[in-house]
Image 1: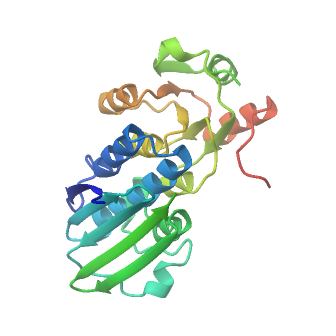
Image 2: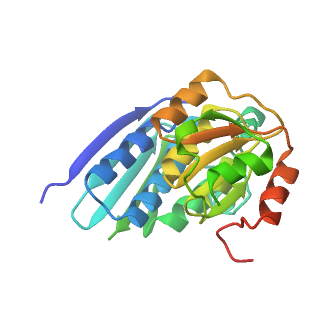
Image 3: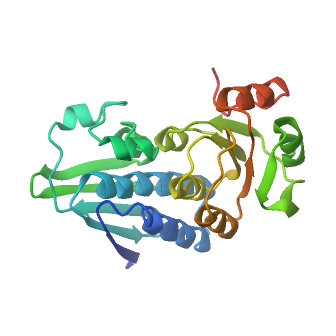
Length: 139
Length: 117
């Protein structure tokens, strides 16, 4: 069966609309009567991924696939990649600039939080050409 | 704890959602780091924060179980924050107490966080 899909462009450093695609994604999940714990986990994973694109990248996109029994979230950006993936996965490690931390983000919890909420998280690419992360949440 | 009680205890001013003070919150979370809020396991929760930008409301909206946001230290959220909270059905209050005291007062009155420590 073909999934229900949603696609959004995410602009770099646009903090006023940051999180909008995750918010629309969440509303769709609720409309489709997806169980609330799944909605919560998927929304958090999507929001952290979206904020990462806003904070760290040159811009990118969020792609969502909603199946009968799982959700796939794809976050893809155009660079500059993750320099040290092992460090980036560590809770509390952050490369975010000061103004981002002042906005309440860049606490070094993004990737760990995504991993915690998704059933699988695959970092397909993380070199200077961009980062692509695929997460699945089963239900 | 009813939001009405939260308002009394914190001597807070309600900025949005005046008609929903009979609603209950089961837990509370005090943080200025939104990723910490996203990592919490609280349900039907109250968020106390000193951070006044739209990402606070966005975080509450994405979590879906934050019933009310209390801005501490007398901080005044801008109209765009209140508009966003109103459309996400989130009650907003402000209190003059700093974060530590505001959390302490609610804790003393029986409100706890969702995680076990």
